[in-house]
Length: 285
Picture 1 (tube, one colour):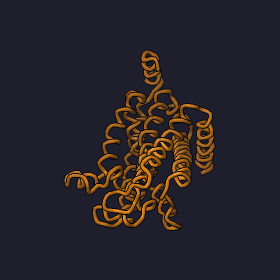
Picture 2 (picture 1 turned 45 degrees about the horizontal axis):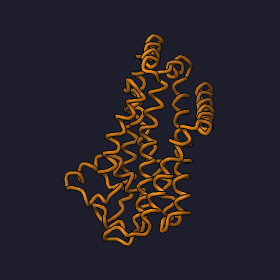
Picture 3 (picture 1 turned 90 degrees about the vertical axis):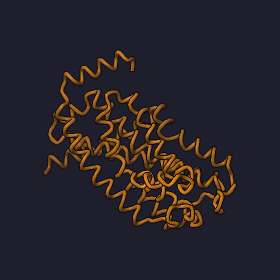
Picture 4 (picture 1 turned 60 degrees about the horizontal axis):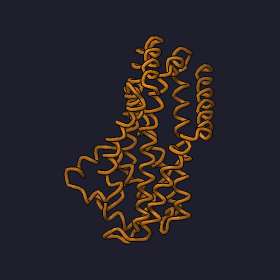
């Protein structure tokens, strides 16, 4: 029991160190924290208070909700996949496997790192938006609490998906670019950028099988006025369904991710890691 507790404490400490280190890396600071908020806030300010057709909700406000959703999806899937793929390649996972309860500590550290990073990224998107985007406000205590639980369930639902994808990447650098294609496709067809009722019927049906639709629905429920719900599929926010679907994705994802990661860890060896390093050196990155 003490060994497991020590592994958890070590994981939390490692995750905190990695989180603080992200602020000293200019590339990670710009790409992970600042770029997306700057882009979406600029677009929202430019669009201003022009209302979305059929509602009294400004386009700028809708764009901010879309930015929050996209940022959470990218952090939960692509960031986790890239981190896991890179650390598999450089031998970090192999070293974790070689120590008592090392995989437990590694997993705790990754969860803590991604959670803290995502929290800061969310704050950097929402707070400047409240200051600079007309009509963008938190919908009281209820809206704030909704945003918080949607955020937590989003990370729990998406992080296992990112971990599974990261475990299968042969090249974590180019592979992440390939992952972004279907991720952005889901974002574009799940009602995040445009009301889903504008989409074809078969797209509306397909979108509901993926977590991105439910994440976007929960974020919009937290950040947009009730009028906008008229453009949703049922005319309501369906918050119980949002919570239920994301919880199911989280449970199924964690179960599958544990199996995939254990299988991947068993296959890793010093020679495989060395071969991966040599391939990376030949590629030049």
